[in-house]
Image (cartoon, rainbow, N blue to C red; front, side, top):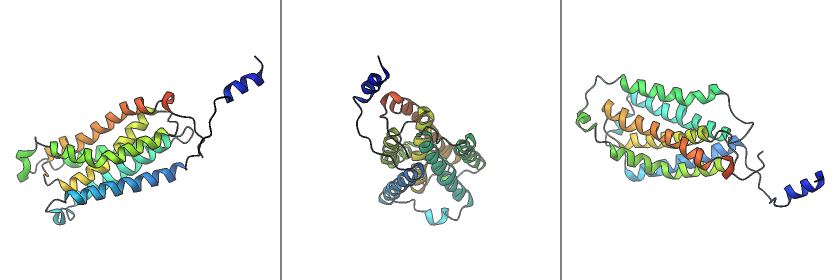
Length: 220
């Protein structure tokens, strides 16, 4: 078979494609959508009654900053960069969300000596799981659909960062709703829930984002 016939055969079933937006632009668009969803959901569900006091607590503010910046922001950037071949970020940048998780766990365990009134309820945190799931549902679906339109070369890592970003922001909203500050509760039902969600993202990524299921697109 001649080269011309091979080209004609390969081009026979080609369809027009739409150029995707740039990586940073798509990250900002999704981040704004996710922030809007979680903010509205948190407002509708109602904040914890002592929120005005908690925002003066340095430990609470540090946890919120870790969830918002190191985990949410950098996980989102990593997910969208990994979805574009050739635009992958350095390993150091990908380590920042993992560093945020480690610092968050250390911050929680550093307060393990305290015994707040909610300690007896530390084993009952399913309400927080449902809150996080509800707040993360729309952002998680949106980010998976957005990265699926690209061509992730590492679907597992892409899914990990996508779910980690969506659920860390949802957990920030959950901590605005949840009044239980017992370290055991925070470690199991807050930190543990976000970690498990990220691990679920690995399997979702391998299932949804493999090259066999992704259309070829032209990426700016």
